[in-house]
Amino acid sequence: VDEEVDTNTMRKRSAATLDKVTERFGPLVLPLVLPELEARLGSPSSWVREAAILALGALQTGAEDSLEAYLPTLFPYLLEHMAHPGSPALREISCWTVGRYLGWAVQQAWPEGAESTPNVTTLLPLLQALLARVGDSSKKVQQFACSTLAIFVEACADQGCEGVLRPPYLRPLIETLLQALASYQVKSCVIMYDTLGTLCDVVSEDLSADPALCDLLLPPLLARWQHTQDADPLVFPVFECLASCAAAAKLNFQAYALPVYQRCAALVEKVLISCATGAVDPSTGEPLDPGLAAAAVDLIDGLARGVGHNFAALLDSDARACVAAGQPVGSGGAERLLRLLRQCLEDDEDEVRQSALGLVGDLACHCPSVFTGAGNGDEAATLAAEQLAHASASGNGHGHGNGHGNTGVGLGAASAVVELLVKSMSPAMSRQVCSNAVWALGELAVAFGAPLVAPFAAAAAVGPLSALLARDDCHPNLLENVAGTLGRLALCCPEALAPHAERFAPTWLLALQSLSGDEERDQSFRGLVRLCPLAWEPLVATRYPDFLSAVASWTYYDDPAPELKSQIQEVINHASRQLSEQAGAAGAGGVDPNLYLGALEDGYRTYLLTEFRFG
Image 1 (cartoon, rainbow, N blue to C red):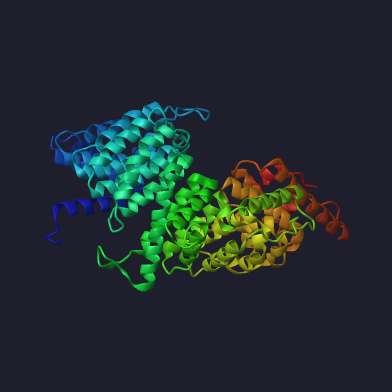
Image 2 (cartoon, one colour):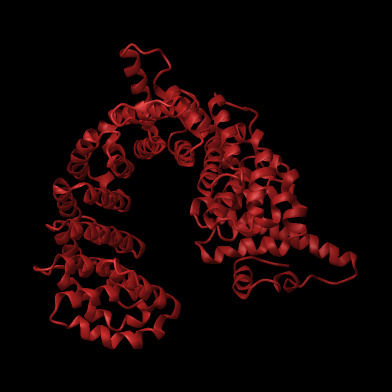
């Protein structure tokens, strides 16, 4: 052992080793460790107790289930030591260990019984203990407490206990966090910004519904954002935090939106110019970090999600401000944003391209008129909505087109963006870039329908989307996005996909089983049943068990809408008739459904026989 390794590092290494051993051997470790742990937790020495609490946290990875019987006693002990007056080290390590067991702690708010609702008041002592440490005099305790509070917020959201974060508790929670932030130094501020952003994500409904809460939260955060220079190390966390606040506050952010947008757009321009020319920041003598452009684009994204359709009016205000300042027409507004977007979509830095792709998808979802210019966006969006409604009503289609002869309403800018999206779907790109590009294409398909995406649908489906589906190492999130986007393309332009269905049918049918988003799942299965008549052989005739497995995966989700269920039944009816005809031609009698249901797992087979008719 290196004699120069300090004691603190050896402690950390010992805890990390215990964590790995417990992860590997799980409950087998606990009988060996528990007697020593119990003795040390009761030691009169604060240093011994601190080491024991560290070891308790390290045991969580593999032994939490085995420790569950002891946690009702251990957790109050940890909360007591979080407030230990004489030892900051005890307070900080207790905060960390509490964070390791927060999943268990939040679960205790649920009484016994499947139909129960959580008693969130039982979580108030824990929340109050964490908030007390957020205001601790020790910087390290502040940082551990903020991190643990963020974990607590996420755990409450995950387990349906967010009520403890909502009114009447939300205002004092925000007040406490802002009061602490006012006294924090840089490292504590970084963690606090993350905690505030996490809280905004969880309580967005309450913030958007209560202007008074937004008036409490936004002015101090905006003041700090305004005084944070581009070269400041806090620029990234404060931009990220404000993006979450803007998205959560919705129209309550509108009064602050224009100067925020203008700074972000100017920053993106400055970074892109710096990267292209090698220009340096005068304040640092260094080239600008491309990550600044990504942070600014993410904040613009938060604005778009927050103010929604009013984002177009925000861009109009920017255009007027640029003209009033003597700048040429087109130097502001939607033209400026689309110009910056296209540049970011072709940037060499993955983080810049990833953020730009996310903004494309959110603009398509929340304010599609940005892509089409004033007056045209609503018409294009209405046209797409009519098309999707027609697709839903026409069901399996049987030769129906998209129902529209109009092939575009000012879609030039959107078409240029779609071309760049398809390029970004290459498997050679990073997973995050690829996933955002695939998702954004699906959102544009929903927003504009066949007039925009039909010219690109076949190339996307035959090329990158099929290639991504075929990858054995395709990440689950990316796989879901591919399945959802193919379904949305099939819904709005099935004729473009049908000739190429053989390329993606087997892997798509498999991927549809794990598609979890309610809206994406609904639209994708509507696309599937609309494509089936046009690509019957690859989707149904030769892969009927795969088709049925995809349908049966609804057993794990909320039931499909009645009209979608009826459309699926039509496909099953047609397949049953076809199988009966084939059996008759072969001299056999009727077709036993078990001939094609028998290959499915029991849960799938039970669901299908319960929810659909076979015969």
